[in-house]
Amino acid sequence: TRLGLSRMNMLGMGPRLIRSIMKKKNIASLEALIAQAREAGVQLVACQMTMDVMGIKKEELIDGVRIGGVATYLDAAEDSNVNLFI
Image 1 (tube, rainbow, N blue to C red):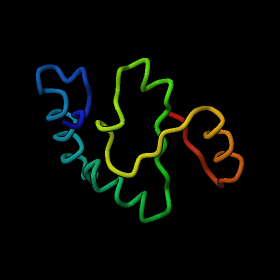
Image 2: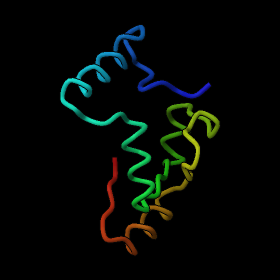
Image 3: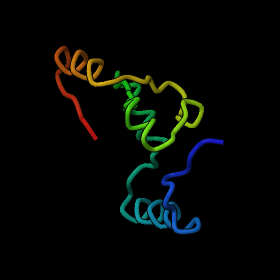
């Protein structure tokens, strides 16, 4: 199965709370925001080292996420107008 909003989801309360806050503030859902980003040409790249440290498998990521390391990030960042490292 895919990971939920967070592994530390407070027995399921965390994701519900975040979604509730987003809805009250008229913020689109995470799924809608990701779809909008992809339509705008955004590429999502997961850090391999972070995945290894946190025990996250490729199968747990949402579809279309590439996996890369520092070299992949630096190469893409050099050629982009904007990049975001989280």
